[in-house]
Length: 289
Image (tube, rainbow, N blue to C red):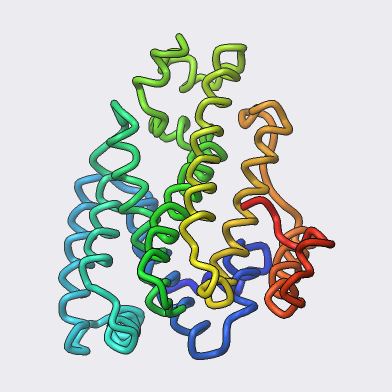
């Protein structure tokens, strides 16, 4: 399992977020995301699910060994050093691994409560780890990490519906499909109709709610420390808006942002941190998320 540095790809959403970080914190965040990518690769690689679960258990065991610097995998030893240096609660890492394992054991989510729990494990845990690296003064800022993580994961799910359907996975809550009269068979066959549009509008509105919760939760004094997270949040917010602008047609339209747009988001928020305190009254310098 060769580690992949997520920040080296210029098209990566994470690349543009990392640009604002000082070197020590950027190295720490890159290590966290490399760990996430390598773990995710175990789940997404070809092969049967039982073999993947075995590899994931072995990866978990290696993680425990890394806490003493004894793992065979340097990415885990680096991750362990970051955990110790920034006092990251280890349960966030184990919760993340549980989220990864859910991708091997669950192909359907009956309720939004189930999906929300998955989003927390798969994404909010990463936000909580990053929060320890960024640093924060207000404990409420951790709620920002939780809600932003759910918002990002919901946006990912909505963008990747077609890809997941090809894998036989449906992340949208089955209770929602039933509410809008849209069947599992229609989703798996990528059927675009008025019922799908109504369903997607509902799901996008829910994602917007979590973006709003995140924005409210971020304490003013912690905003400069969380510029990288805010950049990522705004990039994903624009992806969500892109889904809405193409009338939720994620089956035939590719939902993406250009590198120029991502760079503009990063520059805008970076400048916002150094702007005069009252500039926002005269110039809109921050995106809605």
